[in-house]
Image (cartoon, rainbow, N blue to C red; front, side):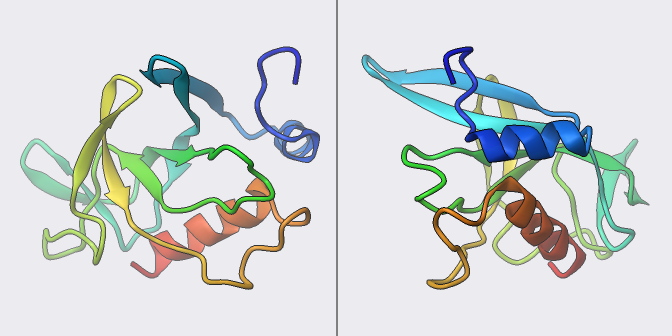
Length: 142
């Protein structure tokens, strides 16, 4: 991790092997504290989620997905994710536990409050590969 990459080697190998586009993000949130995240641009949405374009709801498309990387990761589980721009259900409402927007890394993100239960994260085994499957499933079943 001397190159500034704060991801475990297993995640780096996975992202390279699958050629998954991503950006590592870091911002200071206090005098000696930083926030770290990984952005996945062009994340394909399932057809059950919509974006607003010119006042109309349009099914599918792509968004950026942001996953915050907590200190102690991968012994500490990942928790929740963010999308930008915001997405909606067919009726124009936000998905359950996905309505609020926050400012992170210089832009607005829609917060998807999803939490792995005890036992769903296997410290030292699970990583981004596992978590991205969880994100895909969460978006398919909002």
